[in-house]
Image: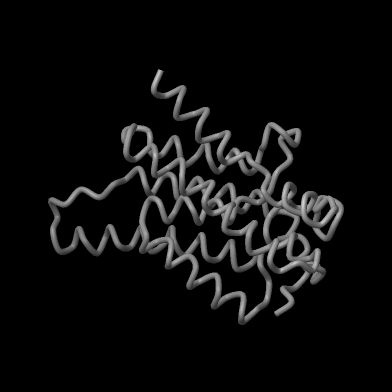
Length: 203
């Protein structure tokens, strides 16, 4: 019964399309018909409303953070499952015929729930890369890769000091899965980057 609760709560939390709800309610627009057609904060920003974009970003982070924190407190054995389902909920929401966003903000929320240090590492890397190249997609993919690599090397560094230390291998696995999924959701962006047609962030 516990696992069913975790699956439903995590997936349904992750599947709430805040970008679509906010732009329709406050802006009278369908964000899916603007820019990339994505329901995430970056595309909401293309509506010209920075406040709606910021609100979407915060809510998308929270919908990844909240279910994982709740699971940590009540069903700790299902933390990784909760994280994965919240992420998949955003990418494949039931309400939008399984056509959702790219999952980056929700991924950040999950990271913060799993490890504040990894969450802040992601944010720092994202900001630096976006300031240099001004591509949200490139920043997201590079930042998720950085988190995965740093986690891997941190394990090796700790084991060099204490060979008997057992690192949480499952967090590496879930981070690897997230990285693969982020690459998958950005496959069109990768093509655009190759063709030099990717839209840049307007600072």
